Image 1 (tube, rainbow, N blue to C red):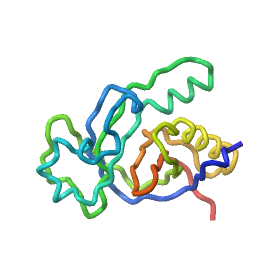
Image 2 (cartoon, helix red, strand yellow):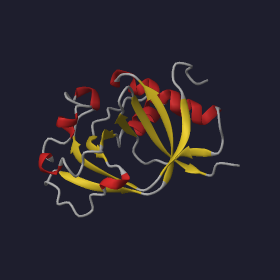
Image 3 (cartoon, rainbow, N blue to C red):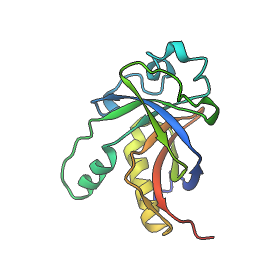
Length: 168
């Protein structure tokens, strides 16, 4: 059953963009995550345009790592995409990005949102989210798109992209 220490709900996000730089390290081995100056250190010239952005990471390996862990196999997630989750008004389509960054368009989609306090709790938050999706609802399923962690003012938010229809 879901962990009562976490709360997960389903939300809908409109079209957005993320500007990301790939690092070949697991998030727990990267110093500076959550510090906006670390996430956009090569984007300083664009800060006025990106001022409403939210510091984020995208974790392309974390779902496969969790599945392998459930199968008692060892898998070490080693890719972390570091960057900025852009607000709708900060569309960066016309911005030339420094070489290590790439722009990712995210269409309107549903996602599960789980709040937690510290990056050290990421794997527990993910386990809770997956359990919640398996046992607490049946309208949505994990899409396979990379989960994201957004640094909000007073908490971290794990977003797990979903597919499916919410029944009215």
